[in-house]
Picture 1: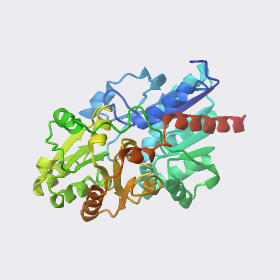
Picture 2 (picture 1 turned 90 degrees about the vertical axis):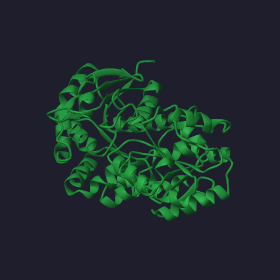
Picture 3 (picture 1 turned 30 degrees about the vertical axis):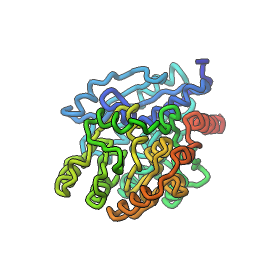
Picture 4 (picture 1 turned 180 degrees about the vertical axis):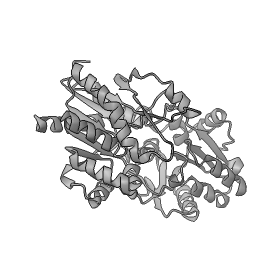
Amino acid sequence: MSEASKHVVSISTLFPNAANPRFGTFVARSLEALAKRGDWRVTVINPLGIPPIALGRYRALANLPAHSLEGGIEVYRPRFTLIPKMGARRNASAIAKAALPLIKRIHASDPVHVIDAQFFFPDGPAAAWIAEQMQLPLSIKARGADISYWCGRDFAREQILEAAERAAGILSVSEALREDMVGLGMKRSKIRLHYTGLDRDRFRPLDHTGLRAKLAQELRFDLPEKVPLLSCVGALVERKGQDIAIGALPSLPEARLILIGKGEDERHLRSLASDLGVADRVHFAGSIDHDLLPIVLSASDAMVLPTRSEGLANAWVEALACGTRVITCDVGGAREIITSDVAGYLIERTPESVVGAVQSLMAKPADRQQVAFMAERFNWTTNGAQLAEHYAKLAENRA
């Protein structure tokens, strides 16, 4: 790679690591696409919140290296003290204090031109304070829950809006999210639309011949060829609506459901499946290998995500690219993706609506190549180019 002329330091609390390899892969792919261009050097600051006593999953995080080279990007992982479920108010401040000395050292050896935050909370307020201390332009990206959830809490909304005021430029993953941000008081002139990317070599329609048999063997889950197969991709948390997808199964005889993701709602979801008598038709796949995800999606008749809020879900785009229609709710940027029945259906957030959409979809199959075409505009090369242009404008305006 040729020597980059500019340098961005990107702060992201969500970033893949050895303990959580699927944690924020979309952030990594976007920044890797930028770094591959050669005109921007990218350094990632991935702050790790560790409780005073690191037990369970926190122990694995505490043992991660403080510095590594990943995907052509230097990644630093400073630690800050985290108080689980109680310390959200102070997390941005703790991150800023942990990261600032490190970023100053990086800046001294390789001058930084832009400070970036990959999420509005807690990354955004932390990055805003750091950018102010270093007198550098600030970019913040909004992705969905960092606006819809955190702006519902007074202390977080105050920090978010203050960071937005300080930012030289803001990115939004969907037009709908941008409108929400303007409604909160952010300046429209600062906000630029920046859709997600997609690995088009990985996410594409795969030949159905023998696909379910291969998947059944891999997952050890009964997958007959002639029954509806539904997949749901997302963290197992209440707002994603996996309970609604499970609730639809009693009215969809023989249908199978694969849940991809991990989260605090798993015990409740397993109990629900058992109570409804469909436990043998629901498979909890957990965090699967990224190469297996396109197989699951390509084998599925629909990707069902009855979510309460999103910016623009990567799972929507990945499913379409695999030729699989999407059943989801009219939230966030869904209307920007699901533009016709070829792409899928926008539904009410009820099991009955899921049932109706699945029945309609099975009665009117769509050509998988036509479905995949609905995701044609999404790719990481375009995503990286837009990011480079955005950062360049911020750096030029400062100069």
